[in-house]
Image (cartoon, rainbow, N blue to C red; front, side):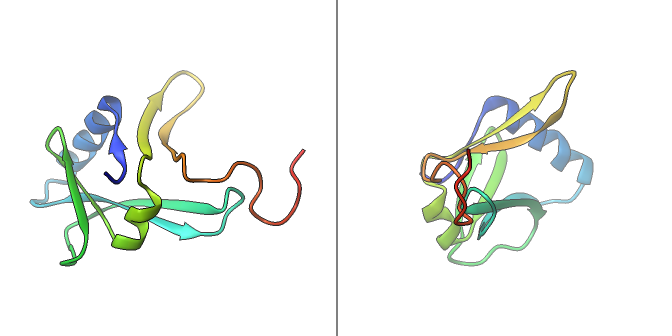
Length: 107
């Protein structure tokens, strides 16, 4: 299974999609090489899907991922947190190596 959404993330994404008022909208998650952890993630709403996209539905929220990103997101979890300090989405990916992926030692 590619990335999964927590209940909190599913609720928030569902609210955001409903506000867009566009039929067949899905959350697209992609992985781009680079960044300090070795990968960076992009998330955006999309109405276009490719025949080879991997799809999953969480509480009525459709998530689409391209095949190469899906391989990198196996076992990953998308969560949403809102508290007094900050609010936002985060991805916990067990496939990402810890530390800096830029060739420098982080200490």
